[in-house]
Image (cartoon, rainbow, N blue to C red; front, top):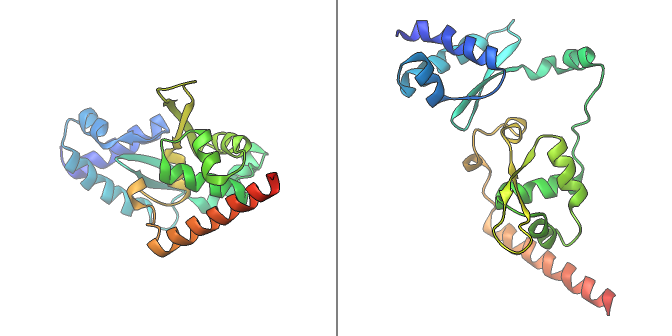
Length: 191
């Protein structure tokens, strides 16, 4: 199949599914190679980026998805008549960063890092679709494991978890010192 013929196939499949589809699955559907799908996707991305288009092609890890351009969100909120508050609090951002960098992670592990109960923050992140349950940890109580979603990647504009910024070693030491100070303060309050 020619690349020019493959573009509308990808666009049609992605439009019909309304969800992310792996490049491998698209290649299987179109009976072509993954490289041809990626090449056609690049051309489709260029076509959709032109002024006057309302949708864009988003790459999320090894998947492709058609999404509404962000500048059109105010119009979409009028359609649903409910404006979903996706503003994250500092606590939620802190919890989300722990999940993103440590996943798969349990609530208890998040709480050990933060030093406080994190149930509400994790539950809100799940409601927002930024975090999801990945399964259960093998061990006592079989606690739930959490990780980030494709929506997290889209919301923060990264293609994969590998694209998350590295934490500079000097910051790691600062964080460690702050955590030790907080732990000492908590111990002195309890005594």
